[in-house]
Length: 384
Image (cartoon, rainbow, N blue to C red):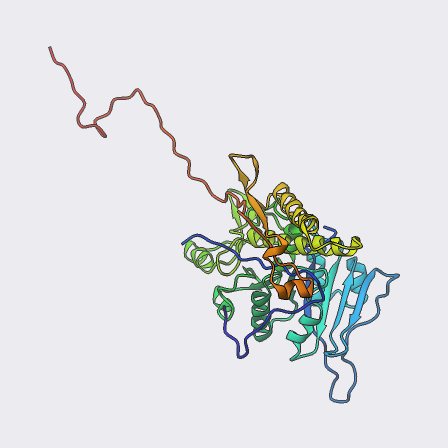
């Protein structure tokens, strides 16, 4: 993880359900593809004129949401169309161009979010809107310090992704190795970051890998073998042509983990939390006894089973069911403190990620009737 002056702790949220997910590795009611664009709020000029967040779009135009954080002054908005966004950001702006590229992809979400934050207040501004309905974010302006900070925020929270586009792999040095940051190597004239998210992220989580994908409006790049090896060695992604067809290269994050694996983990954590929370809200009372524990355990099991159906969880070849398990301890095993606080912490689950095939080696054998002098020594001859 890239270093910062002050360690970053995960953001807190109002919830009665906490899901802790540890990754074990060997020696859409929720928009899991929704996209956030980050931009600094323009400051007033020397005369105090101008600046501020554009505010022309209304709900009648397609503005879905507009929230101001009173502490930081940051403004979070969601737009349903590029036409709605264009009322606040003209067609000549980088914001408009990124948003247009996003909406031009075949599987873009039904919205795009924008967070305008005051200079120097990125961390608190992101914290104010971290649990809004988005899971991928990119910066409109190139600010290495803020990008590095956002990358470390993602690393601390283990839930959402930062997508960074640069022209050289050396530009990723300050956050290289962070698991929840996706690095792209592509000319900045085209918004490959917005295209990548729009083309893939909103597909059903677990059903798709991030390699081999076509990006509308993005030009495949030619790299020397040396340069492409460098991109691969740095766990970055490029848009290239393979056998005459354009495709995204290896679909991983900056530390070499695959995006679909982490996106699946995000789905599991979010949906277990959501489904258990809904159970608390729907039921007049969940008793602190076997029936209540069984109810919560069943919800976790059903959520994981849905994850298996989507392709997040591996098939157990022996049972042909999902390779996951859910265990729950009974009331008597809970501490007096938890019983007193009406807190139950006895459910544990494990699952094996499904993964995907990204390459193949195929061996063939050619059977020939031709006898040659090479391979098995000299050919024999009989002379009368």
